[in-house]
Image (cartoon, one colour):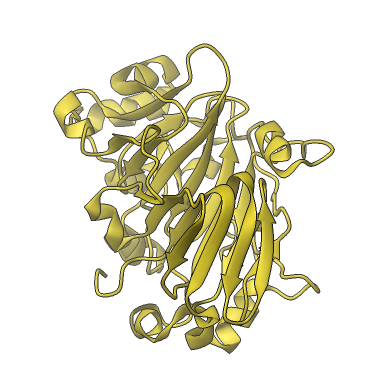
Amino acid sequence: MRPVRLAANQPPRFYRGGAAIADLRDAPSAVEFGPEDWVASTTTLFGVAESGLSRLPGGRWLRDEVRAAPSAWLGAEHTAAFADDPALLVKLLDAGQRLPVHCHPSDSFAQAHLGCRFGKTEAWVVVGTTGPDPLVYIGFREDVDAATVRAWVSTQDSSAMLGALNAVRVQPGDTVFVPAGLPHAIGEGVFIVELQQPTDLSVMLEWRGFADDESAGHLGLGYETALACVDTSGWSADRLAGLVRETRDRRAPVVPLLPAEADAFFRADRLHPGSVVELEPSFAVLVVLEGAGVLRTDSDDLAVRRGDTVVVPHGAGAARLEGDVVAVRCRPPAPGRK
């Protein structure tokens, strides 16, 4: 078991983007309508058999390799809780246009209505922005009754939906934790590393201008059922402060990026080695943002540089990241937290 460098994996999506991914990876050109790079993915697009899955060098699906040796890839503690599912999906997401107002189901909603173990809590690590006013939109500013939300969706009143959300200006180094149910949108020019539960479940409150018709927005449930997953409570500035963190000025060797409540879903740290950073054994996804260095394990040494994405099996053992490099390390839920 050894770390593996992965190629880009950009399934077609309904919105524009991809230039920032191409720039990070030093690719010759951007993929048209390729705003998401699904890294080390064992998850498919909703309702699709294979699109979204990551291939290892040689062409094997990572999903199949993990299923064949789950303890080696994920570790005994993880497999005791999640069997052969990494319980994590990592993306590079480049918003070439504003995303629609949408939200994601919770675990309980997904289990009750979709037969799926996981909902879709997520988090954003902002790694780049363009334009004069990079914004994300998170949670309703005030309580909204369910009938009002249904009316907005029925009439596709985009201005009302967007205007009801908190607009938050972001810059590289900011992180946002997005619990399931929280209505949100990502503004044009925001480039993130996204951690999420391993599903492609979205309820689109705003679909006009993004999808062909409303059927793309409610997961086949109909809006009467799907909108029950929306958090209609108000999010004050004090409440939002628990979700949004500013970490750009922190330069410790290992900088935790997310609040403690995220540990039940995923974990993220930014690594600033300078010399050497010791990393305990874990399944992990590494996104290299700056510089170059070496990822050393007992089984192999892997040279890494800006734009590399690497999947690290638990069975590779303790790792050491060395060199003048900055990277985001993404991991599954903390043992015992789910």
